[in-house]
Length: 302
Image 1 (cartoon, one colour):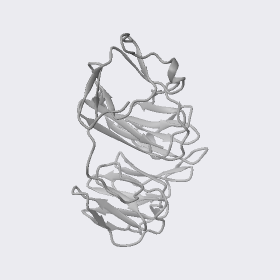
Image 2: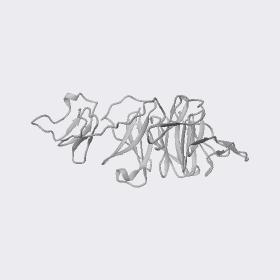
Image 3: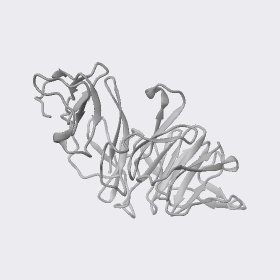
């Protein structure tokens, strides 16, 4: 469907969702003189369906950044990687370039917000960003302590930094994210980890399958078997306030190898698009939660 630049609305008597697994000619849909009570769409672009079953076009944005960045920070701070540099997109769409050249500028950067600062790592580079200044992790000197390793994924949960190297999930000391204890056993999975998604009462970990680590601290974690029998696409896991979907606490979403999944704070996972949307299995992507008018949207790129 296409629309002019100005907003327009039209009435849909019933909407069954997007379906691109069938021939578009065979889908139920309204035609002139014969409205459908159960309309399906093969494709719909730049439209939102309201709770009154009407469709409204989305407004475009005139300001853009014309570079070729990758690895955007999903926490809203505007950090990203472009060329050999770590940068920040400012509200006026200008860019601040942090001093120093990245060692691995083309590897995907992982970000996690830790109170008032940001931890960033791509498996080789590892640093902290605070108030526009980059600083390195300090090397601990106390007995039984090790420095944090450069990691493919970093996440903050329950006063600790969790970080991934291959198929191993490590974690820092509580309240000191710059060091780990050699006496703490990490969590080892069968295949490389693609997702670490903390909620309030545990962490979803994607590897060969998606697992739920129930608990608030490593010593309490219980791996309650497989939460989802499929892989998670790296970079697409995101947690948000469950009030956006009528709940309480936190809830999560991620793109699996066979659909978009909603995961609750208790180890339950539901594929929302199974057998409705057909898409190519991706190996890496990005995601965000966007509030647009009356709509809450999960947007994923793979």
